[in-house]
Length: 379
Image 1 (cartoon, rainbow, N blue to C red):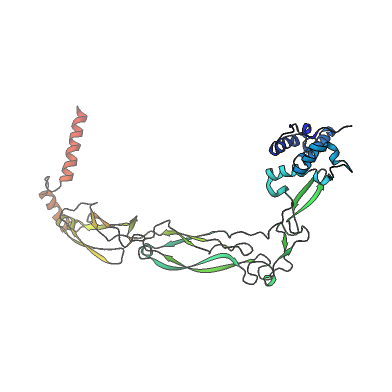
Image 2: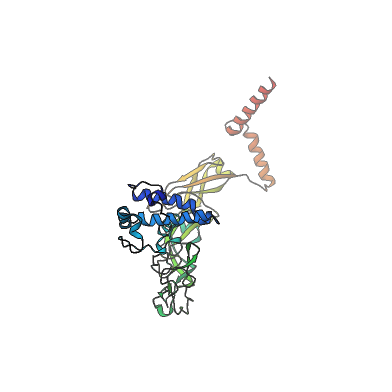
């Protein structure tokens, strides 16, 4: 029985480009693939014909011979001189697997070496005081991390001897098994896909190339650092695989609350109790500053609770700057408690003498509005 024309088999004309042939083969091969047509003898036969046609027409020399001599070019002893072995019949479908699944179905490429990769980055949470954030500091930290084994220099073999090519896969990292029409590839169990094997593992790291260790590191905390700042220590993360570069260590700064000062960006706030008499008559109060110094504040007569005094340039250090923020001192007028009999008498006299708007303008103003409200509610 005469063979069908290869161009007709793929459904393309004789002037079809290489891309058109490949596209047609891909479409039909998927349709007649034995895995999707199990037990269908016609589909199996058609699939073989598609592979044969694609093997010829996708090869420039074979296609030229076919165009000139037809099927006779590939018959035993034919003038074309080409030998069509069974092993070549699946080359086109192998290309499809390469496109769809990458290297999982691709053969012929040796693995360039054992698995490698930059080490993982590490995170370290560090809590510092407000004073450390203001002045800057140099702190020591201890970080558990994997480091490169010094005995094998990260290779994993005894005395750092270079790994050998895996005999099971010849360095490809994959082994093949024939299943029906297909050659199935899987990761080489001997070398775990690396293509290389270590004859004798390093006794220190047991072949991993890395060991666990507590590292003591010095951290420079810049003055003016803010809560949530991230400091990077290059190369202080996990060691890389098989001698690859290590990762980095990222230190996240948290500033602990202070018992006197509150920080808002570059400004410092604090609340200072003011005696009732000082707030009424005026006076002075001495307050601490974040730099460890002292500042004297003049309290004007009649100072109310909540009033803020601004101390320019007495706030926090500003990161990468010589300037500082400001300090704001909020007055909290303290009502006296545990009064003696005489103190109560004096305050009573003060109350009797001070029942006018001049002494208590806020009080009189508020209750004036309250009286207006009550009048409005009557209407």
